Image (cartoon, rainbow, N blue to C red; front, side):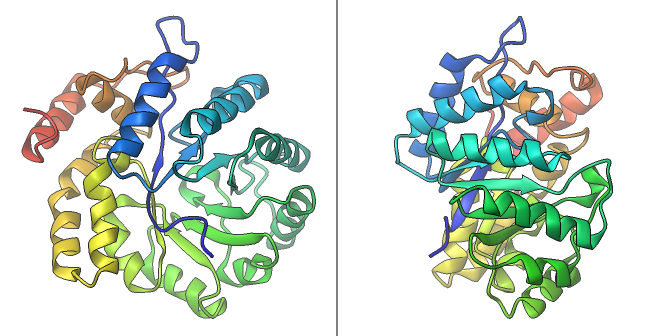
Length: 293
C-alpha cells in the first residue's frame, strides 16, 4: 500500500521576527492544510528550509508536526543529508517522533557515484523501519539517481521516489526499469498530470501550500477518470506555479503565504526576501487564480 496518493504539501516552516520557528502559526497552517484536503504533509523538506535548521530544530519540527496532525493524514519527514550517518540519525529520530515515512534527498555537494548512492541509501534503510521515498532533484543537489539505480534500490523499505528532474522521458524510464513497482510522486507542480499518466501516485507539492484543495483535485479528478477536469486545473495554475519558482524555493511561497495572511515571509540566510517585481508577478497570478481577491 502506498504511503499516500494525491497531493502532499511540501510545507513551509514559519519563522517569527527573530527567525525562530513560529509553532503557533505552524499549527494553524497544518490545520488549514488538512481542512482543505491535503493528502499528506511533508515536513522539513526543501520548502521547509531544512538546510538551515539545526538538528534540534529539525527533530522538534517533525515531532510538532506529527503531534499536531495526530494521524489525520500521513506525515513524511525530510531526513536527507550529504552525510550518511547524519541522514541515518535524522531518519531514526523521525521514526521515534512518529513520522509515517521519510523523504531522503540525494547527498548534495559530495556528488556520489551511483555505487555510492546505493551504499548511502542501503545504509540509511538498515537503520529504520520507516518506508523511504528517494528524492531525486539534481538541479539542487548536483547529484542524480539514474533510473537503473532507483530500480536496484526499490526493495524492502525503500518504496518510492519523488522525481524532480523535470524530464518525463526519464520518469518513464524509471517506471520501465522498476516494472512499475515504485510509488512515484511528481516533484514538479507543472508536471502532475503527465506523471499521473505514467502511473504516478501523486505529487509532493509547493503549490499545495497556497492551493491545497485544487492541487488535491488535480489528482483526485484524474484518479476518478475525469482527465479533462484534471488537465484544466493543471493548466489553470501554470502561471502561479511558475511564479512560485521565479526565485529559489521557498522564497516565493513564503511571500505568498504572507500575502494570504498566514505568517510572515521570513527566510533564513542565505535566502533573502522576494524581489518587488517578482512579488507583483506573484500577486497577479494569485489574483487570477482566485487565491487573492
